[in-house]
Length: 246
Ligand SMILES: [Zn+2]
Image 1: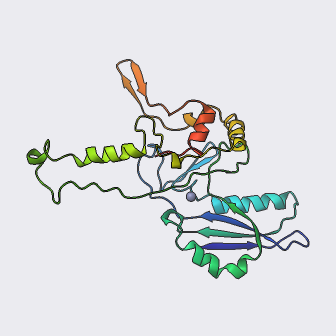
Image 2 (image 1 turned 90 degrees about the vertical axis):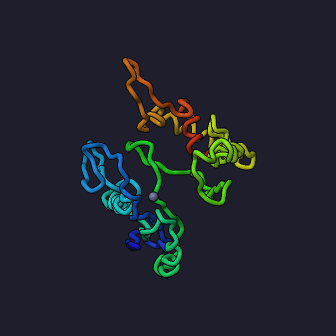
Image 3 (image 1 turned 180 degrees about the vertical axis):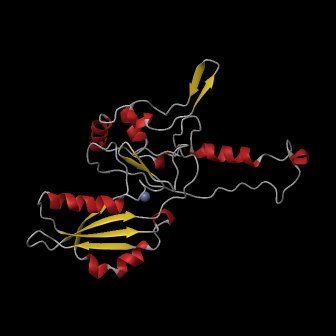
């Protein structure tokens, strides 16, 4: 846990602003562009490429840069503290004990700024108002008690994969990705929809075009993957407010 404490410059201010972020990162994985890599940070067109630069290596720098921007403009600010944890990608199981241990040093927190979300572009400041939650589980299908030779069993012993597909089809329309039980859905509040419309107008088509869609050349023509929708508002709502299986 990295903790920082910036004294107030605003007279009479008693409350604290808490900046939260994390420094642990996902494994580096593969699939990096050939001239980029997780361990060879590269600065290109104003962007830094390297492992965890976005999630969530930027948090501590963004919070310090924000405070420096206030200072550069001579704007007074309340006391600001930062909690930059190292366990977020593993479930933040050690965050609350740290919050307890630091409780006295946190002070009277009146605003928490969570520096761990997305930005639609780099031209303006973005604030996240809605995120999907997640329910996860382990699905097990058992049809035999031990492994047998496929040539002996297939055709007679039902395929566990086929059974699993049927079970998943109760939950999700496999053609569209829509979750079937009504209890997974709620009406999206109208003000949120209005916000989505205004927000989607900024990136426009970029809301789906920014993903690295697969494409293959097949004898003169190109076959390419498509998103679930090309309407920017639908696209934005699909990836934030509407319940889906990933
Ligand atoms: Zn993160």
